[in-house]
Length: 287
Image (cartoon, rainbow, N blue to C red; front, top):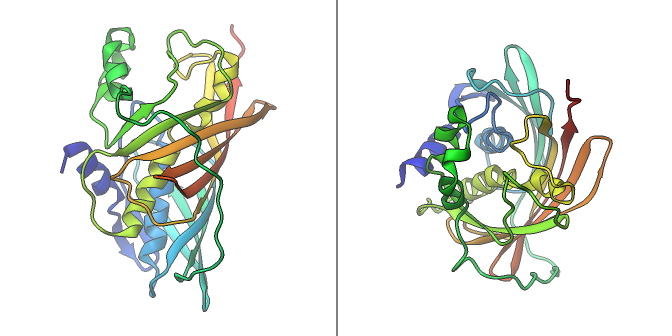
């Protein structure tokens, strides 16, 4: 397995402390803060570790309360809210320095069948022929601040291929929507919990940036403060995170220093997951 993906899986392999309590380490992606997708995925792993019967995650709802310190481990405290006949509910808190920084509720369901319908996948170019995001970044690495160059250009556990990329050094005004193809860079175990946790991790990639597109803003601007505030996901069908997924993103609204974004994840023509997030996109006053 490629080292970047193996490292991420190691980060998601939480240390057991005692019943319902686990500890996780951090991956450095170039920020002093912990990547929100990592906290989301680790919290999901912690919740899965407390299931005593086979259930599959169908939804999660999370709030990011405080920025995570990249230098400190995270402790996950799981509350076993309910074990019902069809559904299991868990609440997870992530704690650093004695204070909660993240809170998540997750619901798991026994596998069952029922009526089905879905929206049709948009007709967009496939991943073949698109340039990967990491190739685009490495092509301009001399323009990246030196202290960020190594983490920004390092190998990644996922390959992302944007359909309509924006130049972060000269963003032009675009519509509040775009799409990204992505997949894990190597084969993964046949475990649905692994694939769901990895999709949770990857789902935080590009969401808030969608809300920046109509305003010609870039995540590298020093006067722009970006942070995930909340994150929700619904899982509709089984999928594999090591096969191409299409992430279709849009931002219906931005107001009050916050951007609201939505995502639909397709594998083939099947809608496998839906995502919603609101995030801080505050322009600091220049002094």
